[in-house]
Amino acid sequence: KQEVTQIPAALSVPEGENLVLNCSFTDSAIYNLQWFRQDPGKGLTSLLLIQSSQREQTSGRLNASLDKSSGRSTLYIAASQPGDSATYLCAVPHGSGNTGKLIFGQGTTLQVKP
Amino acid sequence: GAGVSQSPSNKVTEKGKDVELRCDPISGHTALYWYRQSLGQGLEFLIYFQGNSAPDKSGLPSDRFSAERTGGSVSTLTIQRTQQEDSAVYLCASSRTGGENTIYFGEGSWLTVV
Image (cartoon, rainbow over all chains, first blue to last red):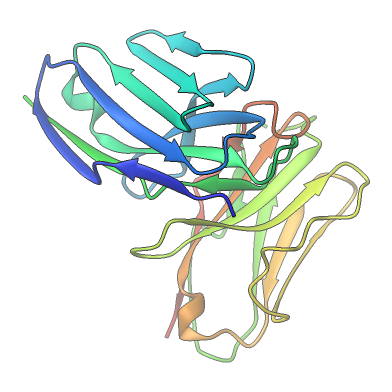
């Protein structure tokens, strides 16, 4: 059974710091991995989608890496800003195929202090 | 539309009553998903529609829950005889096809059963 774990559960950093959020999964036979952001009281916003054949994806100050063999993904946020404060979730499809049935981690709640 | 639209945004209902939650996916998206997010819990998959295929209902927690998608577009999630443990945010999402495409979430319907 696939399990997705995110560590730490919460993180507080001063503005400007570079930071790494971690996501691990127990079954390496994944089709892809997505990172989402959730602001309080809001839905989820997709940040990056990494296909199983890819090692990383970049969008602005965000860089996500994927190491299937070790069952890990990291989300790197450069030069953090207070506006980055949110909960970050990673998710993988259930099973090894292409499905919208996603298994989510519990999330990392990030606070960036001005 | 510009994004996934859900209604109502908030619903308070008495225990034992039925509720219907509506989702309008992004135009042209063939895949539609329902998830539930409870306080202190992670995101829980409920049901997945993909085009004309039979929906994946494996995440529905009980037979009190049902969902339909009419005309390949709008979806309705129905909860019969609501219980207090049904209180949660119900999130709808859509994507162009299956999980290989970015998944877009709505803002959610906040359900409180009193």
